[in-house]
Each structure stands twice: as structure tokens, then as C-alpha cells.
Length: 171
Image (tube, rainbow, N blue to C red):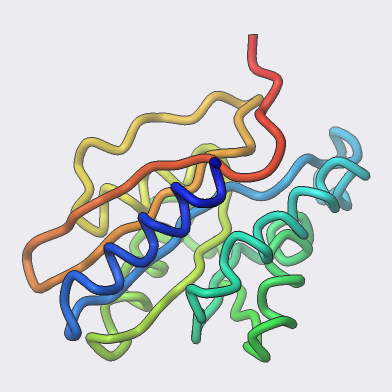
């Protein structure tokens, strides 16, 4: 049921305007440990596969991540399925510069582009806001299942927030 709702949301936004960008924003999947640049845990690998399954019909033509391997590993199944190269965007200049660089990179794409952005709990809400979704809620550190789909149509941004994969274990 959840997958059908998400598929319907993706279809609705994609059909909203032939000249609107569709941007899918997710946080990286569960990490294996608390090190500086961890791999994905087993649950994270399952979630990365669930993301690819959720985006089968979305056809992203661009995938942006941070340079950290947990974001790249989360994006890899989707990127491989759609034969898209992952483009990491660095943290030079800190979080605000990273957020601005991601937003600028998205905005520079053609009007009909479909984009997947995989970031972090502290960057995904900021990227959503930078792209015009001012109501984007902050993310708890335990939240891994939120999927935000933005429809960017000029100065207008519409959003649908859904969930994918197993529910996050936030208390």
C-alpha cells in the first residue's frame, strides 16, 4: 500500500507539468557504525534496495550525493538500475556551501529533469528549503525512511512527503 501511494505521488508530480523538474530527496540509509565515513549496515543495504524499487518508474537521470560513502552506497542500486552516474557534491565551505551547491546543480538542469539527491539528516531538509519547499521539517537522527518528492515549476514548488522501506525505529 505504501509503495502504491508513493508511486501515485511520483506519477502525480511527474504529470503535473511537462516542464517541471522532479527532485527526490532522501537521507542515506542506516549506517554500519558511528565512524566518520561508515558503510551501510545490513538494514541500510536493504533500504537502499527499497529505494531503487520505489524509484523504478521515476527514471532519475541525475543522482547527486555527498562525498561520503553512505550516501553513495544508498544511491548505487538506483543509479545502477537507471544507468546513471552518481555525482558527489563536496562539503568545501561547510554545510551551507554544500546545500547551495546542490540546489544550484539541480536548478542548472533542464526543466524536465528527474533528480535523486541523497544526503544527511542535517542537509536534506536544508536542500528542500533551498529548492523552495519552505515547510520541510527537520529530520531526527533515527529517521531513515522519509522520501520527499519536489515538483519545481519556475518559482512554484509542490511537495509530497512519503515513506519507503521499513519504518524507521525512532522513539
